[in-house]
Figure (tube, rainbow, N blue to C red):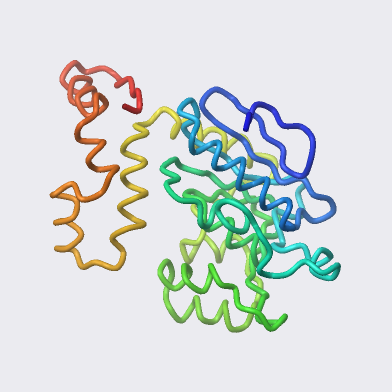
Length: 266
């Protein structure tokens, strides 16, 4: 799949150097149905496999809705909650294996339900100051599955439980207070800030990024000694690749020569 400037359909893309921008564009609210999710899975898997791309930004059109989650109109028309959402599951990110590249989320409004879950599947989250957040699935008699797994691991248990059990909405200031998002900016500065962060990440060491992401994914169930033993014996593919790479030598040389390293990703 070519990612260069997709301008038709519900998912738009643009490539700027080593950064891929992915934009959800489904008026009126940027809700996601199964077909859109499959496109997102194809886009993010192509991003993962393209060695020329180092970082992605996920955002959406407009300034009211980032994403409210599953398209309930599609549900009313018969689409099942367990429909085929494609590679990476709902929204293309949450279950995508081996995505060793950073993804920045630029939240430009309401992020509810599945939209909230797609957001927290990203690595760095920057939100416009008018953004709001919620997990309202409880009101529809369904479970916010990904959020139920992830949120209590990231914020205090009782705070996560309140959000899951009540479905209440909260603003960007509270989201930042609990560490759900990284940064709040004015709405008209959102994309400039996301691009600034993505550009900086794109200049970093790709093999280290991949190793960090695999470590975080694979060791959360281990105690500290077990996790360190796994890393020290190079028990993860990304760790083995990193320490046998040209980039590992380049980092040491650049430090000794007092210059910026040139990362090749190999």
